[in-house]
Image (cartoon, rainbow, N blue to C red; front, side, top):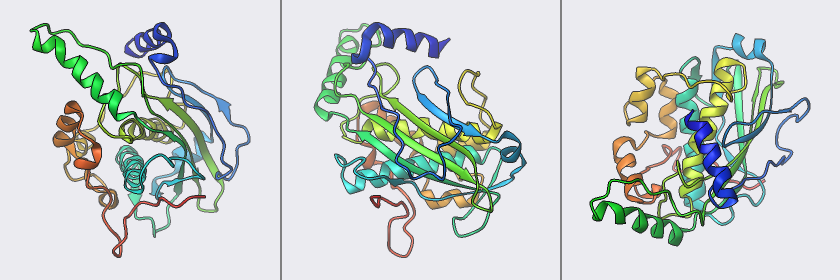
Length: 283
């Protein structure tokens, strides 16, 4: 019901209330054949999955997300690293609900590869204005939630796949979603919406691999105690997820509420051999 109401609100506000994101294919995936449209209330997607093969898998490794081509050129290198790592960390925590996640240098039943193909920036000025406007009712003693100003919204397009031990594609998804005035908090960073949407993608792609089915059109499942704890910054269920750093947890939630940039509170991936753990190489 909440998703349906958001869809109605977005339709009422038109493109101004919800940013749009294009479905793109960069050519980075092993195959784009047999992909069928499967859209959610807010996200658009094309996907293909071999349910039996995916459900038969018990181990998975996550290759670091990278930006494809000129995607995210408006973001700084630090911001691209942060967004890409946010994808990997959230995906690792979500997949841990069923899979044993192993380090990237070990073999697994499935290997995920993820590419960010489009990322538009959040307008920090518009985000700041939204924070000011939303604070007015509270200052006047009126407890009325105020939607974010429908300008300067960012968006994200991602494609990902899961390959078996022989390198054959068993699942693939092309996913696109724009920020909206109702569920994406405005933060004073060009990477604000892309960072927020990174978690939304990982939830959808992760759910597809957990169930072997489209993640859309189904009621959400309650996360495990371990997943909730990891979201609050606790130790993740699988040690391999530590490579992507800990979730900012409550500090991150408070920072987001105040509109602080995610780069202020998210320490990112654990450095490997003196280098950041997340790839930002252009393709």
